[in-house]
Amino acid sequence: MDYVTLNNGVKMPILGYGVYQITDQTECETCVADAISVGYRSIDTAQAYGNEEAVGRAIKKSGVAREELFITTKVWISNAGYDKAKSSIIESMSKLQLDYLDLVLIHQPFNDYYGTYRAMEELYKEGKIKAIGVSNFYPDRYIDLVQFTEVVPAVNQVETHVFNQQIKAHEIMNKYNTQIESWGPFAEGRNDFFTNVTLQAVGDTHNKSIAQVALRFLIQRGVVVIPKTTHRNRMEENFNVFDFELSAAEMEKITALDTGESAFFSHYDSKTVEFLTDYGKKELK
Ligand code: NAP
Image 1: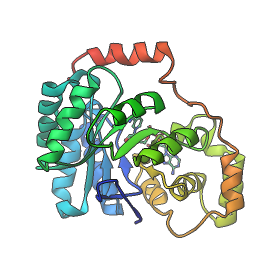
Image 2: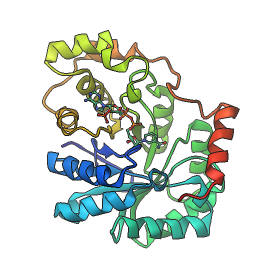
Image 3: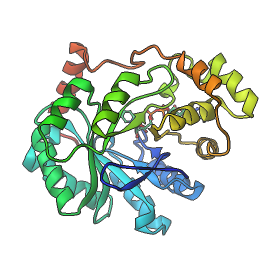
Image 4: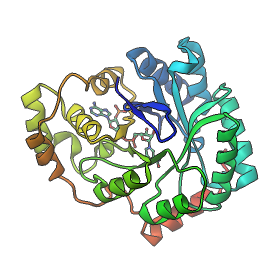
């Protein structure tokens, strides 16, 4: 496993396992247990995924030493603001059965995220969170937050895959010393991702799959990846990306797939913001 060093010296695995949309508790517990036994040490969950308890049970049962694991959760929009964010993070810790979290992110740049960030800064200083950061903060809101907070976000998790490479946003994060992390490294299969001819041709050269080439591309760019799958064989496949290297010419070919646009929705689109904030007004179950 390769690691990145965050801006506060904390080491984070460059490859982790994401559990978005694994809502069935038993399935999620089995998946996380499988992922840990395959070798994953970084798990990405969120309050809004509704599976923190299942993740916690799998971690506990794994018997892997706490310091070997890197556990991320995210504060949802409905828990924004200093007091609510603070108590929700304590609740997440309790659901995950952990006495500290490796990384806590603000899930979306909406509602009182400054208040949320102050609560995270406090918990960070108390040692209850090893690193703090944000998610879906695009250059406008990201720069604003960096300029008016004390602790520079260690991580910004944004949609990043071969079709939406975030080249400009990545440059800006580098400038302020924030690690980029990809969500949706396979674009959740959109744009015919898993039959892309360019990725297939590169994969054939290395005897690797499209998924492996796509992850390798991001890793070579210095992007942290957290692919999701419920299949153990795919967990193994996605984990097995450290024994080959893409050449400069191959990197260039894949760079050319960038559309510069989201394969999902744009955080600059008023309809998307309305949808997310309407959803964010509802309390989590
Ligand atoms: P993703 O990892 O891009 O894609 C997951 C999809 O790819 C699933 O349908 C999975 O199917 C399939 N897949 C996985 N490995 C495969 C392989 N080797 N071959 C063929 N198909 C494969 O999508 P994602 O779950 O949206 O993103 C990853 C993680 O990022 C999430 O789990 C979550 O932790 C995080 N995330 C964060 C945000 C945010 O707003 N911060 C948003 C989205 C996601 P099966 O499961 O059936 O194998």
